[in-house]
Length: 74
Image: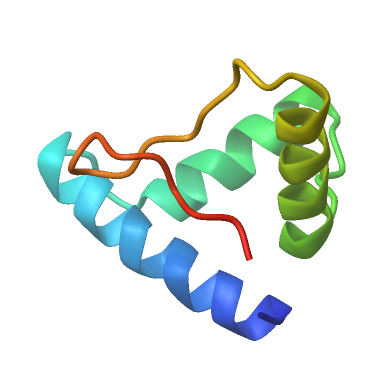
């Protein structure tokens, strides 16, 4: 998986979440919050790696999918 794929998945999720929450332009709102907080978010691949590392450190941490089943790690 590369950054381009992750960005596409994020855009798809943003569309769905924005519609579900009746929120206009979720990416722009996120960018505004990040800017106001003075943060520089890492690339999505790095965030994914960090999440995987956290899950490996704590076996009680389980990421669930929409069906409530655990995601399978590759």
